[in-house]
Length: 297
Length: 225
Ligand SMILES: Nc1ncnc2c1ncn2[C@@H]1O[C@H](COP(=O)(O)OP(=O)(O)O)[C@@H](O)[C@H]1O
Ligand SMILES: [Mg+2]
Image (cartoon, rainbow over the protein chains, first blue to last red):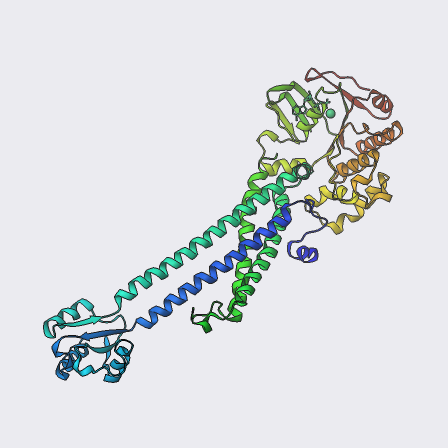
């Protein structure tokens, strides 16, 4: 490890500050915990987003028209509705549900023997949308005029709350991520200050024999950063391994999206979290140590 | 080299040095004397910039340290070698690493100075202890380590605070001869001591001035040895 550090940072000779004390294992441990939490947050956030996207995909691009009332069973009415829909911009395809399909939909409520023809059930027309779909309000006005009792339903009632839920989940994940980052930064700053305070005499001596702030800060920052990287990598790996080891939720039907983005994506995610821990430690240590050193002439 | 004029310094409002004026010429040798608590260490701390004077004028190597940036202060310090009264050796470094520290912090190439360090370690008689840690050394050996560290960077100004305080008279004599030898190489030397026998021992070997510190100020016209 020391050899590698020497290669990377050009460190020569023994560390400027002694490598004893509590702050070393504490920095590693807090980086580990924070990365572990970060992985959980990211995975949860991504899964929520993917799940919401999947729900939405099921509902976008399609709409349903319900033809209710006495004329519903009249083929001419259905024909008229189809004609209106075909001439509306933003609609790609129109297809009335067959009797069998209507049966299938109603089966859970009425059983297999329901005499559908005798019941005033609405007829359903499946609509495939083109792009953003039609102007729903304008279409509804036209339907009201020409075929009263007919309702155009673009599932907006479902989509709105879903979009809200997805956005809320994303905000939550981002908030949790931010909290983890802030807590990590605070811990690194505290650990940096503690190391500094524990080595005040060493620092004074190094300054008095001609050491610059940059040189002294570098010695601390190098160590804090390498510990944060080690802790971050372990924490991320641990988190990802534990999530990977969960029973297959897709098979249970609880959650039909994968939690991890494949082998390669998972490795990248772990790497990014470890890198994030390193960068947070680097920046926080840099700022807090440089500021603290200025109080020592 | 060093010029202080009417310099004052106090610790938390308690004055220790007042209206202190002194000039140190390049290549000169000074004994700074005075009773314990007179302010000898404090005076040296002003010279190596651990403290700055509260008032008065101060010139060091032609610069005004009071208005220097942190980096400028560092660069000034690199021209000063200090033998601290309490040595200030880094406990986690070996004798050789401690001695090499001023070169290392100045960013010098270790390959380039390894031989110089080894040579100086032998010169101060610590060849056998090159890889020892400070806690394994006697007070005299620590003192010699501190002296070697003070001179490794070939500083223009050497400040030694009670450099014979922890050693027997024999070792004291050797340390004194070492400082006189460095002065012979053109270095300006200030030795703070309350040990008058050390000053007597130097008589006849070096053209030293005595700076007597009393009442917070240096008595001017301090005599030659
Ligand atoms: N860091 C300090 N804080 C407050 N007072 C100090 C400090 N260092 C020294 N003093 C006081 O300043 C006076 C001069 O001390 P010092 O310079 O160490 O004298 P000397 O080296 O001549 O024995 C003493 O009275 C001492 O108690
Ligand atoms: Mg003293």
